[in-house]
Amino acid sequence: MRRAFLLISMIAIIVVFPGILTGQASIEKVVLDERTIKEPLKSWSITFTAPVNKGTVKKQNFYIIDESQKKLRTKLRLSDDESKVTITPETPYKEGVQYYLYVKGNVKTGKSTFLNEHTVLPFKLVTKGSTNKATSSPTKTDNRQVSTNTSKSDPSASPSTTPNSKQKDTKLVSTQAKRHSHFVEISVKVSDQVAKVKAGSNEFEYKGSNLFVLYKPDLKKGEKLTVKGYSISNKVLETKEIVIP
Image 1: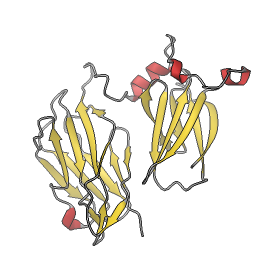
Image 2: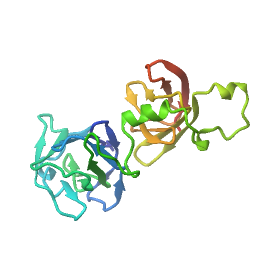
Image 3: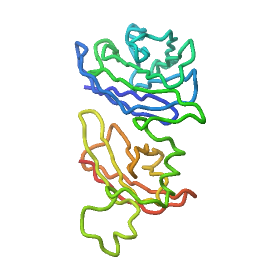
Image 4: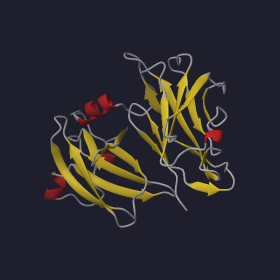
């Protein structure tokens, strides 16, 4: 059975990878980490690896609601190759209001293949100069500030094993790959010198406390992934190889 995946494009790409269920849509729900945006009329693009059934591209399946459960007026557009759905608000988002982007499990690829999960992406509009709440994920700028901070570091960033001379020079402190039903979650704990982490062309998201995370589909068991840690000047500080479980 062919597996269908989708991506939600944002300021930084968020990866959402529901599996498939033939014959009916499931009610399971996956809630992603909250994101912040700076564009009051930000569009969201949901990209599938298989053509979407046109009959399921409707506002009951792709929509945005606010914290009061009120639906926003939006426009939907299906790409020419029928693999991408773009949802655009007709009115600007309000500063600091909690919004939720929904992609329902009722969406089909082909004639009878449903996504097996409802995917929910919480987000807020945070313009320049405003303060962000602690529940929001740090931006790339936040990442660089934390990485170059000389204040007391997070104790959880230290290795769990007994330190030695080699570990003192370690920039990628620890790595972990966790397999979910439809994607692999790769976590990398770093030292204060690391400003960003990449695996090939895929850049990890900074979660705070010196932790970077990447979500990837289509990774086979035993496959090796090369991860690199970069300084603020874009210099490679350390390279590690992760074996996918």
